[in-house]
Image (cartoon, rainbow, N blue to C red):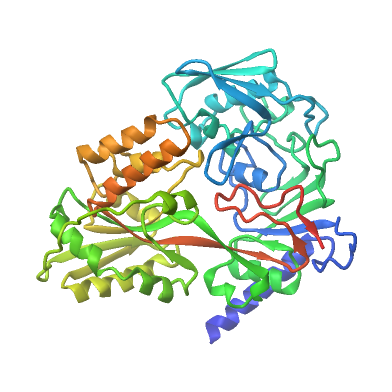
Length: 497
């Protein structure tokens, strides 16, 4: 009880501070027209000065201030944005036609040269945007087109260009020393006019926007790392929208103010196939049969997660639609008291509790289970070195391109950089390689599901559940985005009722 009192007091203090960041209340009654300013409590403050070449780019995208050449539909297929169309003219060359009539927030015009400038600087950035890991390209402007040439054939070029880390900014944003300042340099329906480090950001409606004009007058952002404080801001009216409400706080909010959005993130148990007991496929099968994922979802996540049917979850609806039965599985062996080491990390609050529940389930099956739980920074090296028999990991299954192939390759291919299961099987490598070479679309998705099935049949990775992100919205807000990829939050249509 004392702990809860302290937590409530901390949250209350944070809400008072949060209220001070905003000019008006969040009830919407001060703006019956619905065109007022939207107040947002965001989870993580910027880490790189809002540089679009960093993960801060997703903030610029969620505020609809910076835009990309391409966007994605729900399936992950490419759609026009600042580029109206594109053509693959050879195995390694693409041409993107730049939209005419686009004006940046500083009054300058979007041209092919401006777009090429951004893409060239992204390739030279240090560190390079994550979407460009392992990628090399050369870019030039030709008339109204950007011509992009890759070092090797890359069927995912359009999807890569949808990443917020490749948002196109006005030339004034780029300093000679490599730093990027996005203030007043975007092209979206909202103009970033002020940015106060890790505290707040202010955006105004941009009336010169090339598309549908924003309904709201602006956005006032406050960075609130404390989850209890973000939830309290919705309850008190200090914020209209709150990112990432913790599971423990969701029950304290009115049901009509929360939305649960499936995330492309899976909690998976990885089993070490190179050394130790789980070199035996029959013991891996015994683990698969021991896990009661429904009990974990009910007990640890209070029902606010989805039981996994595969590595790819409900955030990718095409996966469930196209997934086929795995066929006959390896029969489970009796563990007969074999001792295993189960590890995870503390940075995601639920994982240590998942480990405790899983430990009991495995012991009920006949394993003897020792636990190792540390902060991620102190366990990653041992994890990658294969020092544990089993590891619980919360893993994003689609990266910035919206495509799962990079995840499948890094986690399950012989040369995968994140292959903590130490899996190395020709049939898995062949399936992943096949998927990587297929053009984007239904055929690629079918090949991805074949690769997923090849992995699942090994029992080297046993998916348990898919996480959801919980978003808080005041009842006075209309049309905020609920985006599994976390690229959108406030759009041109978001408004106060």
